[in-house]
Image: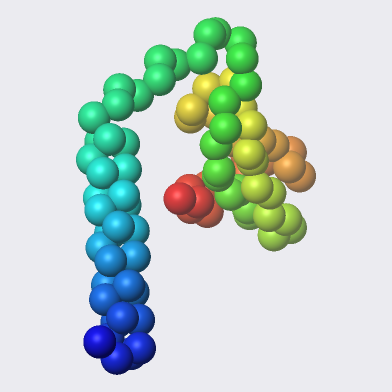
Amino acid sequence: MPALTTILWVFSAVVFGFVLWKTGIGMLRSMTTPLPGPPPTGEMRRINVKYRCSVCGLELKMTLAPDEDPPPPRHCLEDMDLVAPIE
């Protein structure tokens, strides 16, 4: 009769193999599904962009916009500078 530790090692190997298999299949399926179409015109889109005011230093994070590349907002009567898109 095998020792208890051998049974535990085999069981953990089977569980690890199953998790690895499911992860691999999920990754392959995610690569084969087509991307969704763009939302209709006028609908808000999710974005993550940070802007900074060059006059006073105020920082702003924009999360929704009507298009993917919105014009910069104005603060202190000046256009704000793009800091970096947040990925």
